[in-house]
Amino acid sequence: MSPLSFMLPLAALLAATALPLQAAINAQLARGVGSPILAAAISFAAGSVVLALVAAVFVRGLPSVGEMMKTPLWLFVTGGALGTLYVTGNVILAPKLGAATLFSFAIAGQLLAALVLDKFGLLGLAVRELSLGRVAGAVLVLVGALMVRLL
Image 1: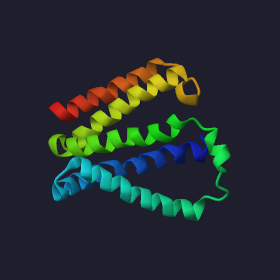
Image 2 (image 1 turned 60 degrees about the horizontal axis):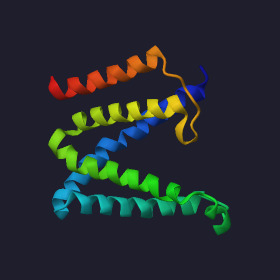
Image 3 (image 1 turned 45 degrees about the vertical axis):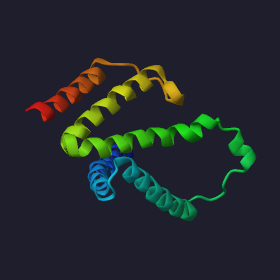
């Protein structure tokens, strides 16, 4: 196994540790501002400012407006809209379920959706067949989520 094939999953694992922290922080923000939707909006606004600063430092050679117009409009809107659904759902659900239950089911849901995307090669992804191991892994994640919630 190459070092990169080990480092990329580790990077994904480490990046994902931010999600329960974000949910807990945003839930506290919702209590402070009196609304989970307002808290999610503030979170996205702050994230947009930070991302704009990071982009200003690291992105060189912005595409022209003409090049950007070749990209379907739905691609500009859908990712942000799905992120809004996810973050707002986390703000609402984290205080009710707790971080472990929320993210156990979030991971199970993400994995099930990812298996469908891979199976059919949707949205430009490479087709990856459903193997017994992949299905068993998804079932184990779902069983694990149920155990976190019920036991």
